[in-house]
Image (cartoon, rainbow, N blue to C red; front, top):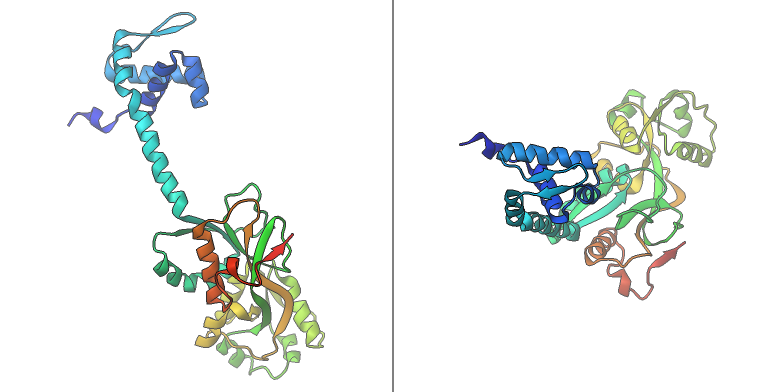
Length: 311
């Protein structure tokens, strides 16, 4: 097989197709968002590949040769067809993709272990995860839905509470045994406390609720709660765990609650969607599934209580 079969110059072909349509390199360059020199270079590459002169170049203008005119007519519709085919694929992908913003910890411990059930119901849907930890603002994004923790107040969003946040001290059984088990919160003075840098106040709040004073000098700070919980499972110390999302780890015995003294933080996990655009069927189905698996009423759009509006 000829080497040319392996190296069809698609970029030069596209440049030529556009230049032959407009009749000038300047207009083609503006259409493609590149320089006139770049257009000329691409067409020169194509001419060298074909061994045929496609444009006559003057000092101030260019003109298609007879071969160039014929070739241009032959390929004129090819890139239009290619763009149409590409757009159809992209449109189908957009129609089946749900763009979800969710904290890494919620994705790892709460959503992903249960996501197979959603995929079984809707195998054509794909969820694109956005796990950035930053203030939620739907404006100027492609986000369809978000799962966030807060007090129910977000700009330009509507939402439903999924569950309230409850936290408690957690550790591995091996760690508790090495520490001769924990008899009271006062024992925390002698152990390493594991923190997430995004949730540093949670330990302070729990210690205050326990009515004890502990100098937090022996503290390890991790970048995320996922890492903090992983460290606790590996026996590195005591972490402040979100009980609502650690059910599997607690049920399996990977983690235990040595004091069984949960604290309600006053925050909750919400599923949210933007107010400035209609909510698609795929997004409604994901939202209703999340609510259902969390013990909430599904089909919230027709619920007598209706959705919570947040501003």
